[in-house]
Length: 139
Length: 139
Length: 139
Image (tube, rainbow over all chains, first blue to last red; front, top):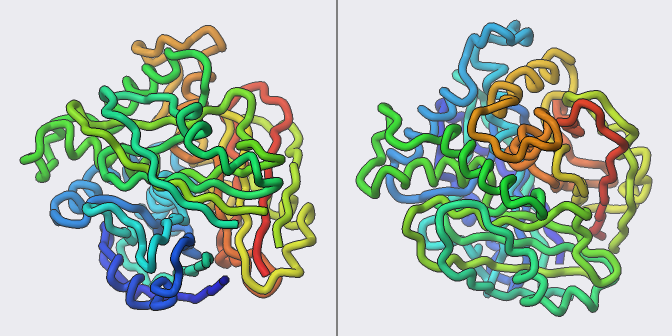
């Protein structure tokens, strides 16, 4: 079985946001699969997807703080500067984190670990909504 | 054909560890596939999976040394500190490296390059065993 | 439907290179799929694959500049040094960016966003050609 759907994530502030429940709600087809895979792909270059801790909000704010160190604004060697100081760091954060995540499906559920959640990582200061393509397959 | 299995990796010291042989041994089903994909997914948020050099152990110890620079302990802006100084860096390393790897299968074998191996990246000082979900598909 | 093919990318200078058109040209089978996934896997440990901005070349040169900061040459703690000063940084960049990318297929096309392209990230100073394994599936 193959199923594909666009999922729109409303505009979010810059930072790391849990979207696990929104993804599961948008894909009731997961429940019909005994074994399979979900690929989530973000069609943007200044936001990304990650999987990490789903409980303590300070993990997500520390992620934002630390990625701002790993990919700082206004590095003297940046030449791609005309879209604002947050743009080139957003591209760098996006390739570090990745445009897609693949998650196993077991017995009708996403087989995430107890502490795992799906993050939408928004790297722009003033973002619009973001589009994800969910591709589901299995049997 | 779909096949899914949990693979338990025994507790490892902090660092980068080759697990290629253990994965292949646990999945004799790979041999029955002419073309396919293996998705390996780790169900934890402070350990990760990567693919890199399989020969010289100093590559893996240099990885550990450098990731400790990329995601240091005790950064002054960390707020998620109550699980120990190695915890927040472990979450950051995990999103940098990733929770899953997808590897092609060709003619009954994992189609890794000559120098490629699968790494279990353990980011905690005192970890327990780690669970991977292997999802195999192909024909 | 499963299809797998080796794609050879000719030797590139160190840096980030757009290969989207070459990938699409090599895989006319994409046009026959209504829904599916393409997995691209690089069989090397000092080059990697990423997805990011496809328009302004300074994004790609800024990526090269910044990854040289994230994984510098000649860090005093590197022990894997006998393959040249660019080798250990190449391994680190490779695990940060990743050995594979999975891209959805919709209605006969790669479902990349408007601004997304596929990057071959070459991390060695004097590289040879690179081999990708393209695994296509769908219906």
